[in-house]
Image (cartoon, rainbow, N blue to C red; front, side):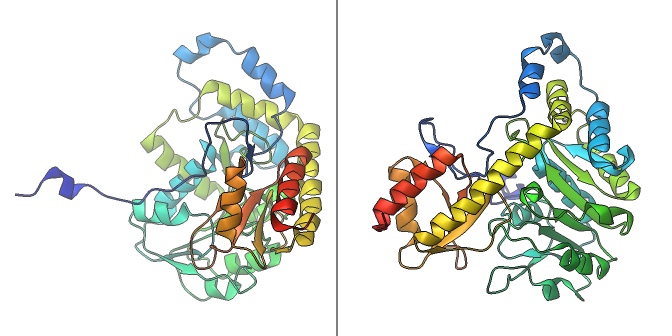
Length: 354
């Protein structure tokens, strides 16, 4: 007789970046924004009426939808919100990739994609990046796939595929939904958002976690045709209507309204990233030309694992991914100038390049 355990759907879960318990570290391993959210966000939290917590929140997140509509110039019925872009993407997999046909995404990319595919029993193939780690558009064209997911800029490479390349892929695949995951788009890449009215199979996902410094609040959103958004909402409200709490909705609204702060912090990170590229080059590293808030670096002479361990032993955390194509690289989040100076000071001593 079989046991209940034999009937369990077993998956290998996603492994997030390490969150060290010691707060006195330089944490450059999870692509968090090194700056605090806008001061208006702090005021919302400090003035929140705890009485609202006894009531269910607005399931439609109407105020947040309106703020997103005002900020991006997209009608509310073409916007979907979720608890972080991971929630939005998971709902999208569950909604759009159910045909049984194989979906496609890059072989070096956000490592949650294959987890969701396994979780929802979606067959998939990975399309190898080119030798320079850029997206190979030919691998997504003429395949008649059941769905496509491409992050832009890609993670962990940071490369921007460019709107022309992405549009060619979208145009060639009208038979399936194409998701462009723009978690890092605010750091220098061009969004494909203007294409949602041209292609009714395009879904564009973004997040408050990176550029708006709200990873702890979990706000994600997507833009698409009215049909796509309706189907997403149907699945969401069949799963859990009350996914985003009241305070988080208000925090998201406040963040969107402080546009000057958002632009200032994004520019600071972009400028620090460009300075970091020069420092990494000076120290003997090479890397793809990142348009994100991180750099994927490889040293010409030293082992990535050795550098990773040396940094960690000195309370500097970066991210290392095992794998044939990624094992020689480290992904380094862009921190404050002081944090990056400390990183480069240690690397100069460690590599003998001071």
